[in-house]
Image 1: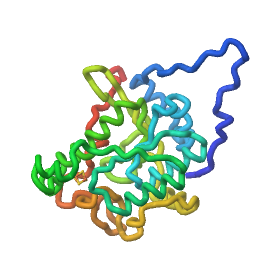
Image 2 (image 1 turned 120 degrees about the vertical axis):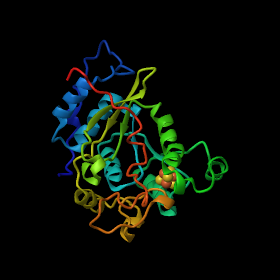
Image 3 (image 1 turned 45 degrees about the horizontal axis):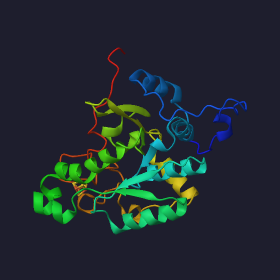
Image 4 (image 1 turned 90 degrees about the vertical axis):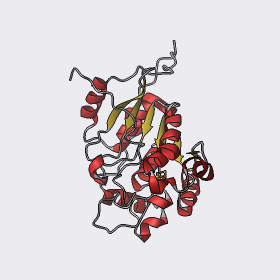
Length: 272
Ligand code: SF4
């Protein structure tokens, strides 16, 4: 993996002749599953920066980076910032994050010079306890994740055309087959769709951390204490170096994903 950034100038269209000027379309044509397959072929082996540049040229600020501040998300924010791609950035604040994670948000906002929008659940933690009983994560973590992560994410995705994630294939078995371009039904009744873009899919853990250290990007100090993947306090544990990166999440439950990457139905082309 090279972290060399391609020149944005190479990728920009040539200036238009002075007259007549046509404004760019406010909303690009929706992608079809066949378009997505073609894009996956076209961008296989391309740098993450090239993929991000494509997203910016197609969607502009209707594409946003969603991050929980794992390493790949930090690198993606850095690649976007370095290339002048002003994607909005959002996070899911469940109300149960580590103090170190909340502090990291402030450090990243300073470092990148942007505001990270925090999407919060409708229910506070005490309100959730009143309705569903205390410490729901101990009894029904799927319901807890739905209330505190999936529903706020769905509300955010309603505003967007493209969701940029830091998912990597190497992270876990459940992520081994992710593609760079994916298309999902956001609302099957209205036909509303969302493009999910995983520009970091091919990065290894070593490449991510080499990039973070080289560019002195702020990261969660809990990583230095043995936490490999960091989520909510009640559901995150330290893990041995040899284990699956996400092995420290939801220990004791048959659960490997919080649901934000699995709740939407994928749109497929039945003609392929
Ligand atoms: Fe609840 Fe745990 Fe999911 Fe956080 S990770 S929303 S505490 S179940």
